[in-house]
Length: 142
Length: 402
Image (cartoon, rainbow over all chains, first blue to last red; front, side, top):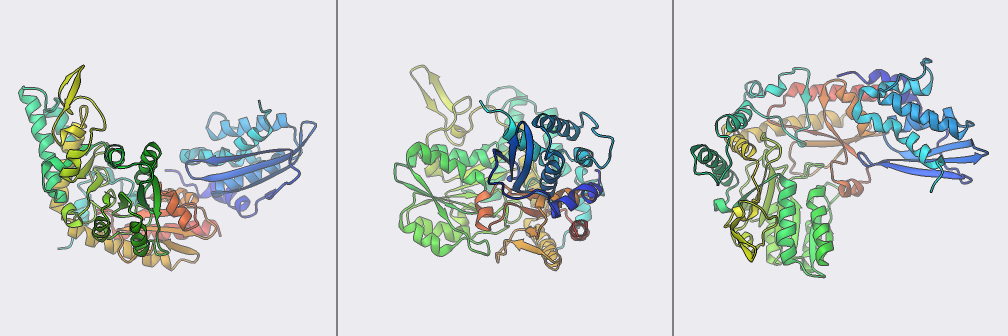
């Protein structure tokens, strides 16, 4: 078994204790909520979208430290970015956590900091939850 | 007589890894070599279908299979062997009661009283049958300590529920319910009592006649036996009145396109080729538990649970959930500001296996206004050293988040 302590110390604990961009966003133009049925974790992602840009990005939710830290890092990374870039980043995060690609070389990049979750398959969904929710929020609905 | 835990532990090949402190026994227990050997022997030396062939091998398989039923009958104190229905597990047993007895008994407006601490498998089957029959499911509440509210039981019984469904031992709180008293009061109100015994049978002697329940369900895999095998005990007169649930081989006497005559008990409820080797493994698990002695096991496990509760209670920000007077060796707890899944992952990193989550008991989590707990559950092979490793591990979790 691999020891998750380093993962928690390097990435998870700080963001989960001091989440960025957590709170309501009454003026949101896009929003989605996802529940992880395995553990009941719940994440809501809201955004103000203008001209294809995520002008403001907020999240709310309850859940484990990995889910909350991942949501926090995601909003920090993607606020101000284009929807297109956000969707590419979500794909990349999921591929990195699944172990399909290594992701950014920069060890401080949020996606690189979440890479260690791949060693704990039961927790991968915790790391991807917020990113899935963002994808739902900004994908054109039918 | 005190147990020789280290000698017992040596009987479990899967516990040979010294670094593993397996404290998730309420999910499933490990299996002693006697059970593994019995399952292997069933395939190596008795590989044939049961109740069918006239050949020697089939008779050997049938004898071993039916011998296991006899062991179970004695193990739970059933009056007759026909009252022991072999199923694929507790869930299948409870669904059998709901779909066969429930559908027969329930009419629109009837009530099923289900305790708030039930595993989803003793709640959802009743919701399904209520939907089908027009009956309704009422909640029997749980107190702040995690015990059944017996005054609320009396009040609920005044409305005349047809069925009372209650667990013998709560898988998430550890509470041991006074099932005999529930049955006494429910019977006085003409209700039938269905007991989920999955968490009880490995930890204390169970006598279904002394409990006075009408149905009692449990699984082999939580009592050192194989997965995929369970038991439904039912009172003979009730089982006889009940229609079959599933149709297939073994549950019939004769079949034509004009109709089918069903087999006698217990086979009426055992359609299809059963988990023969698994049932034989269950018989071996009963023998093994007889040899170990449930009283001695209970004493040993209670000491471990008490030590764990005492040590964990001293940690800042830790709260034990479920403080009933009479508890099985289950300790559920929450930590301020640290989610159980993070506790579970960090403990796992130190070789301590615990269960985290809602434990398939969401209503009782809601009752205590929590989403999840970290649950520690002991078996006969656990040691005081493992309790120390658990407590050190929880301290490590708190330091990581400090």
